[in-house]
Length: 287
Image 1 (tube, rainbow, N blue to C red):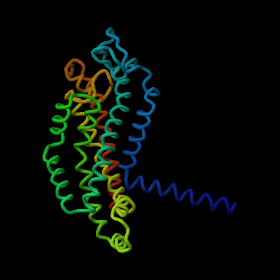
Image 2: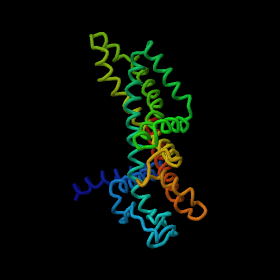
Image 3: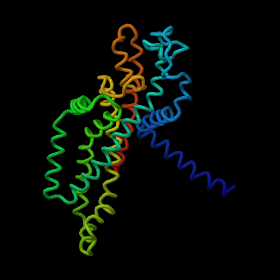
């Protein structure tokens, strides 16, 4: 009995810690729950929407929300609920992929720039300033407008827009690490500069880049949806929240549900990601 009580106590302690953490940061808990649900929907959309997002039925066009069609139907009779559910995978995959590309490129280039400094840092800094001189949505419109509306071009545009943010956070981290004692010690014993960069600087910069990834995700989602609404993102018939918004704008007075539900999906997802990112940022700052 004494042994059972001893093993039960740590479990109660662990559970009490989780409860205390949830009370201190309810935003983080709510955000994580919504993000977990979104990931489940993105990975298994068929569990939530048995209807096909591509099935056209003109006889059911512009039907309001009902038991048969939870979010109603669009002007071709496609089920809006199915399109929003399947659009979760498309939208999140585009945002995650674009942000990953910008994190890898911006993080590596920023770390190299901050570590080596000199003329390389000056040149790269000026190039980043040029990109930052454009408002993000304007730069996205320019890139997708020149290259043409396509999924690959949308990913490229989003990556270019957000690379400077990763460059700056990685550069500042590399500058801070480059002046520390362990770097000077490594140089004194003859460790090559590229080895110091790859084995020490990048390892310490990586947490900053990952944190920036979480913070920027809701911003990427909003820009992606805005470009899709302008017709510069994913093209029909592929389901995407921004593309569904664009499709529903012509019927906003007759069938507002076409734009309402993908708009709510963007809003709720961005809010959940923002709550999660801010909470993790505060937790990292306290450490």
